[in-house]
Length: 75
Image 1 (cartoon, rainbow, N blue to C red):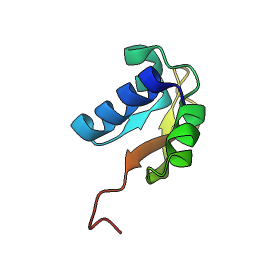
Image 2: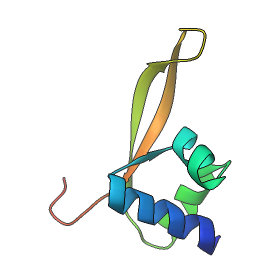
Image 3: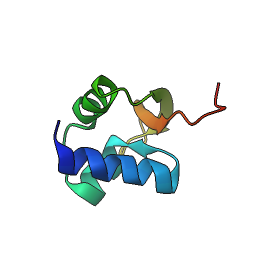
Image 4: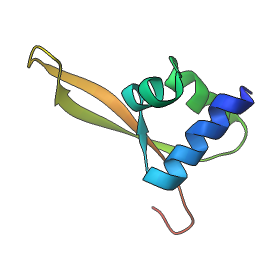
């Protein structure tokens, strides 16, 4: 487990609710967020994924993942 990156990602999700790969890269230098999410899941942390539709810098449609931790009581 990449402790430092995973800890930063967990902290971000707790403080801000969710994280995207762009946020992880810009704020924490995490280039492979999906891999860190996989690491966290392998350690028993329940994380949900939502596919978000947006636009890239050319105003073309794009899709990306937003991750958040499942808290007690979440469905």
